[in-house]
Length: 473
Ligand code: NAD
Image (cartoon, rainbow, N blue to C red; front, side, top):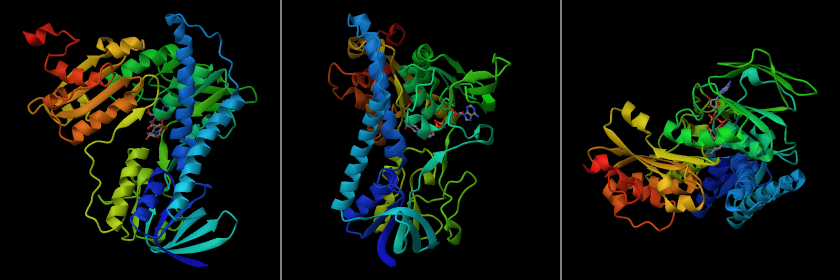
């Protein structure tokens, strides 16, 4: 059976479903194809959303413990893993079910199956019921996402060795958990398991957690995480993973690591993700895949084949859902004949640990590497009344500013809610805001958002709650 559509979207994650929905809203006939029963992709089924549900639980657990400092004691928490898992599944099904409804409301044809490319204008889909369908399209958007990387040294298959998908299942709370990789996933899921009661060791092969992220921000996180985790080992790699019925014997290489293998109950491997560009039949088109596996695209997200577009994790870093949302709009608007380009000044990033770490634009190190003359301003949350009321004076808000024009080039925030607060930084940079622009905006009191305002005031040496005698003189 051949079926004709104007736009076929392969992959129904944040990039794919956004593209399909917008195209339908613009009047196109759309077919959305994914192996899952509803749209959602990795983000909703086994990424952003379930991990955020678990991180919320982790925060409640640690806050309940810390509440004793305010005179409130709850006693030892009892964790009902079955209920926790089913609540997490309810979150996922609420969200994916909602997307299913939105798909139907827009009269998008949803095909549950695996697609391959027959040629630049035809896809073959092996449908979930075993049948096979051919879809002829004017354009297709490839949005097949990414999967966890498993380098050879860590490729051992065993139920004690987990990737992010397995760890999100929370089948057990392992007494001793090794997390390989001190990046987004390692730190988010490591925090969840540590809060649930595992003794967590993180090994990171570079000299710092979250390589590339401003060390001023990471330091604040590392201080709190250091108290929650059993150990954080930097400059360290795993040379051997030997799972047995009793545990996993792990040989580590790095400074001060024991020579003998260390026994862990489970190991979470979180050393990056690789794009799913191995779409069958892609070689029958002019689509080009680079050495790292990303599909090469132009500013409109067009591939080497005029009928085919690629967005999201497939189309390059950063592998973030909100980048995919935006690329989806650019690709669809291009197909609709509009003159648009994917050229954001900044793409914000958030690590949803406690404290959250969020940044956008240039870091101080990047700005200096680019030869820019920059000044920075750091506002310590100890000077924020709101932070004091929640006992979280550990946070910090940092601005990277062009010295001459005083325009904001980068914003970094570490502290509870940093992921929400960073949006102001995005708007500021995209709008070309300067320090005076920020200081002229009245921020609500008492809120953590005032740390942006006071950071700007502090840049001028005029912050109400930070006294800087040297600048004034
Ligand atoms: P990552 O790139 O963030 O971190 C991987 C870490 O593993 C790096 O610090 C790297 O130096 C380290 N590493 C690599 N090989 C190693 C080895 N052999 N031994 C020890 N350390 C090693 O990757 P991730 O945490 O797997 O996440 C993948 C991607 O998923 C992220 O880059 C991000 O794009 C996305 N993600 C985003 C969020 C979010 O937005 N909050 C959350 C989870 C994942």
